[in-house]
Amino acid sequence: MTDLHRLSIRELSEGLAGSKFSSRELTEHYLKRIAKIDAQVHSYVTVTPEQALAQADAADALRQAGNANILTGVPIVHKDIFCTQGIKTTAGSKMLDNFISPYDATVVAKGKVAGLVTLGKVNMDEFAMGSTSESSYYGATKNPWALDHVPGGSSGGSAAAVAADLAPFATGTDTGGSIRQPASFCGLTGLKPTYGRVSRFGMIAYASSLDQGGPMARSAEDCAYLMNVMAGHDAKDSTSMDQDVDDYVANLNATSVKGLRIGIPKQYFNVAGLDADVKARVEESLKKLEDMGATLVEIDLNMTDAYVPTYYLIAPAEASSNLQRFDGVRYGYRCENPVDLTDLYKRSRSEGFGPEVQRRILIGTYALSAGYYDAYYVKAQKVRRLIQQDFLKAFESVDVIAAPSAPTTAYKIGANLTPVEMYLGDIYTIAVNLAGLPAINAPVGFDKDNLPVGLQLIGNYWSESQLLSVVHQYQQATDWHTKRAAVAEENA
Image (cartoon, rainbow, N blue to C red; front, side, top):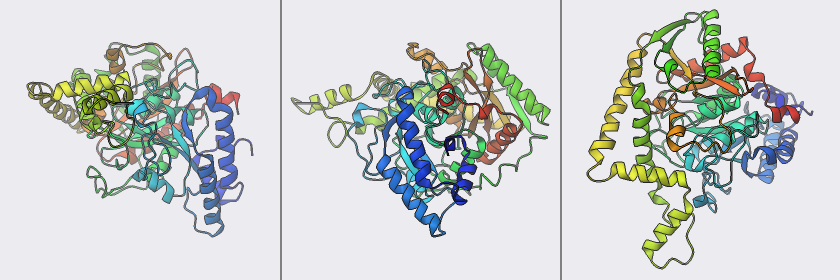
């Protein structure tokens, strides 16, 4: 079959179960596409053909023996922030260019238990710091819809790989929008779960109180299959919550759009810099949901102006602390011929970290320093609580909250946004991480340049099933999620 890459996860599972094709055939199909197309997109950092084919053969043997799971033999790709045993794990950084992980992240290990076949590791902004995937040590990933545009970040490689049909679905991580924004830029569905829903063990830390792993795929249904694998308590992760896990696939039709109260924050639709096409497509999608029976309710989120300054104090402060471990001593990059220990530290870090990572370390170290800790970091944590309370008050009158996922469509590669311009592009996503809430991006159309636009739905704690269900029903009534990027169409 030449169009295996066009099948949904459910169709791939059914095809494998019905012996229409084997996991080896499916895996070989994707490996051939990667070899043919990825030079244009640059979504992969590492392709693992030998391991993938061995896993595919093992999956076929399990099916032959009648011991297969629903996803046994389905290929997946992991963001290169998840540790993978025996495979290079770089976090997009020169600092970890030589790091071979001795263990699997819990998310990767769960994927292996489910029988998923790992095709490789995909590109990302260095240590997940960025919104364009241009800060990667391995070079910029390109948007399959327009190769002179970015795919978003930091999970840009995950988004580009799926959008170019180089993987059926992918893992991503979201610290301030790094699943939702690239999903928006690449026309995909991407879910950021409630903080603590997905284990962070083996996920290289950027900001520990904000980071959360989640699925990226074409549809809510595809994301639900991967959430069934990723979600759950993990004793190895002290931030993992021991909370009952839904069957996200079984619950895809559990929430009715009819009667759903969708909050429309008036502050969100009056943000300076909100592109007119983005606003129009999001409003059209909300009108469609209203036609399907939802009720649109105007709400106030009064802390909107505090989102960016609060996030860009807390996240760099945690990054400064987390990245202290990369010192040139134990593992990772080490400078050549250091004259003493101080020189080893200084040069290993200045040579191993890129400009954006260094910038955030400096901001974070300053915010945590004596004399400034109370004025900046402690105050930001207090404002963070107010942001959380602002959302909880809104959820007293609505079921979900709607917003654009990003104020614009994808930027051009090399647009040279100032750091502040890039940070302001996160205005709609970062508050969700500050509050620890779940949120999802759904593709809802295109701008005048045929670049995808995304709608973001934000839910209350542990409402992943509800968000997936609402988007799934929207996708049954629309076809935006079925549209193929230019690169994928040219190589159909």
